[in-house]
Structure formats: structure tokens, C-alpha cells
Length: 91
Image (cartoon, rainbow, N blue to C red):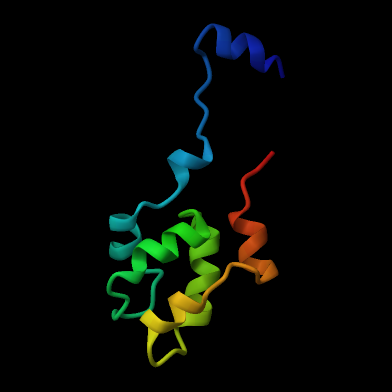
């Protein structure tokens, strides 16, 4: 595909990671997080996953069994291969 031509004539729309990523309010309002109790940790969760929906989904899988989700978000490092692979910026 001649992408350079499409870009030149403004005939293509590109959605970059920054457009697709969830911001704090969207993350807080989404149904992917289990229940409530995240308090101020939403900001840290968005930072650690870069707001990437797949990273947030993987994080929520681990958080749904936690009694103190706010504490669990604090310990979430993103080093888990599942989270790290889906939250890493694409080259």
C-alpha cells in the first residue's frame, strides 16, 4: 500500500497509541475494573499500563481477587510478561 501517498492527500486516518489509550476518567468509568476501591490508584494504574486497554484488562484479571485493590495497584510493576508486552509502545 502506498501509505505515503495516502498521507500526502490526507486520504487515510491513523489511530496512534495515544489516541487509543485510556485516560484516568475513562479507566475509572470502564467496566473492565473489578468493583471499586481503587481510590487514587487509578492514576498509577494508567501510568503503569500507559492506558493501553489490553494492559488494563490483564491488570484487572489480577486485581479482581484482591481484598485491597488500592494496595495491589501500588505493587503492580508491569514486569509480568502479559502486562509488559501489551503496554509496550510499538516501534
